[in-house]
Image (cartoon, rainbow, N blue to C red; front, top):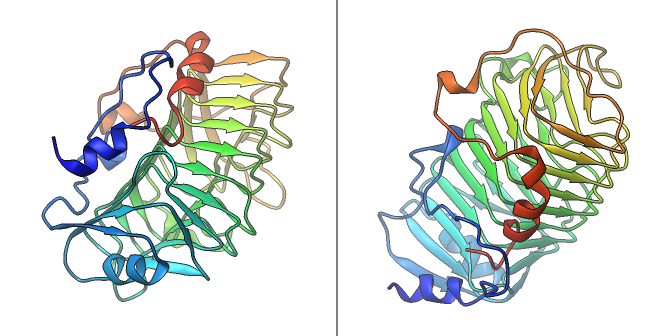
Length: 309
């Protein structure tokens, strides 16, 4: 067994319910390999993380302990950034995948806690594609926890935990950026939204956006928003204490209406899921299997977040 994999596995709780953990990207990010073609390095400072994340060659970067970052660290193509054990953390800053001249394609981010970011915790931008964001934990920061925008696409966000976050997940730059049409194909599955407020996700223009088997608990404003003619398929999610699980055909805030297909979801002490319109099926692009919505709270609580891979 590789040494870094052994370190990652040390944090698995022996008493937790059994949850199958994939070692490869699925959904729209299928085929993402990250830094597998390059060497493995271990970092414990923001300077070293920035050095390897910004290199022009592939790297698997292991984060040891807590790294204090003063701002956004640029991540360019062919990188895996993996936390060791259950204590890897980036605080005060975040990761930006791609610049206008250096793409952030083929990137994997797993097993890292993000806290107190001065901007976004993770920003997938500038036409980044094939990105897998898996088994991380997001705590409140200044702006978005995980934003995907500016013609980025083929992204999977899986098995993450968002605790008390506000602007949780934006998908689409703004109402005035129709260049995102034809991009923003994203899969969100088995994420745990625990006392978060909004944007789970807030979608503009993208289709199809696949939201399945997520657990929404004690949400402040709303769950999912599909706007600006976006197309969302929401299935087999579990909503508990969510005042507005879905916005779509009525628009949201200043944004124009979107389309949303909902099926197999569970609603406990929650409002209605506004749905309507036809959406391209995710199965057009990839195969997947669904867990029953009734099983989602136990599965996701046991499996989402850091220290579980």
